[in-house]
View 1 (cartoon, rainbow, N blue to C red):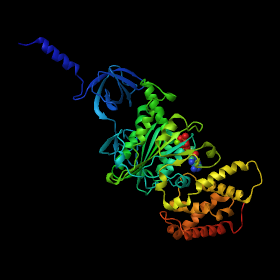
View 2 (view 1 turned 90 degrees about the vertical axis):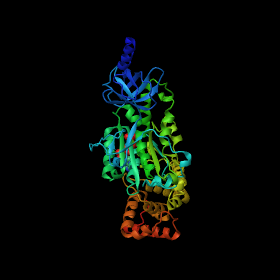
View 3 (view 1 turned 120 degrees about the vertical axis):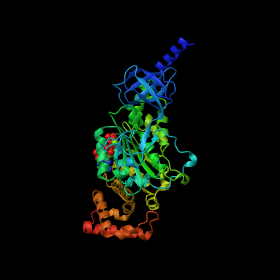
View 4 (view 1 turned 30 degrees about the vertical axis):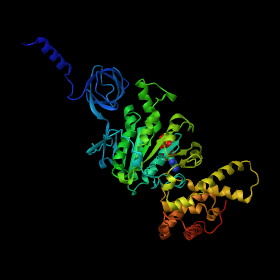
Length: 506
Ligand code: ATP
Ligand code: MG
């Protein structure tokens, strides 16, 4: 007997499933606006799963609720409509990884932004990935040289460390990160520059600098500009980190810059508010700490059994009016292993890089510092602090005794020595020369105004005429008394030559 009811039921079921992709569940959009969609009927979907929207658009499932799924669209926010079908994919968001990405400028999903075609990467990695376990980590013991004297001497960074660069707008934050990348030339370090929500023009400038400096050979730029969809800005740092992990788990050292996490937090806030999640302090959602902690925990130095690779992270955070106690700055300060604090006042008074030495620290890099640098920069912080304290008193203009005058003059000259132009990185040996001279009696004979020129000239002189002495300096051994004398003798020789023997003090 043919049961018509039975046939009718089975036909209805088939019709209901029409348009469905095999193996995955299907739902339909019941709300769409501001890049956010709500989907009803999507039964089998996980948090952070990639969704396919009819028309070839992609979305990220973020809110799993009782009767609907809230998702953010990566593209096509003005194209998707009420009633469109949405398919689950069973996959997380993935980033293309591989050597092919070096030298490229890509979006957070690995798509090309430099007009050079799709990167030929065979592999992908999920953008969200668990951080290495405690037992898989090793102590940070190798330096990551930035080439910036003030940083390498007083706030040293080790491979596998997370060091925050924090400061107001236009204080040279990006400049430090870019100089650090440029300095990795020939050091066998892969660099990744993640740009989050920056102006396209600033980003173009940075890419040009990297290209001109020959740094693109070992660098990948992952970017989402200010006019990209908010979800792209949100996943950009995780995508960059996935690429970094590809290299780290192959035993390589990686330097990754997140420029900047304030804009990242703002993008996440926008998304959360649109998804109608409850807002907390400064209108950020409650999980904004986790947003950055899970990202920065992925930076690590792996143990030898795990290949010994590392990810050094330089997150950047922008402050408002120097307020480092705001929500995002305090969060990120507590997650990182130290911070480089840049100050507008210093920057404007010509101290560039505008590092506030008193408020900057590196909690793990010290043990990774090269021995010679460690030896001769031991007193730097104290000397500078003493100088600054005295300099404030000096404004009252009382008579100064000899010792005070000396501290003041040495301090001023040390500050002058620590000033450094952009793209003028020093090698470790050059740093040793500069620091040795700046803390010796030789410097007393040079007026403050001439220090910058003297240092530059001295290094050129050493490279040309004293190459063997420069070569004799071993960064991994203590500077012996003999070597110190030789360096100072060379400095005196150059001074004779530069100033013609005239004693030019102030
Ligand atoms: P933003 O907040 O816009 O991102 P930022 O803090 O990243 O700014 P940079 O863009 O790095 O700052 O630098 C601001 C300006 O200062 C740039 O024009 C840069 O060339 C200049 N600058 C940075 N560092 C130095 C330096 N050491 N010497 C001279 N000029 C510098
Ligand atoms: Mg910047």
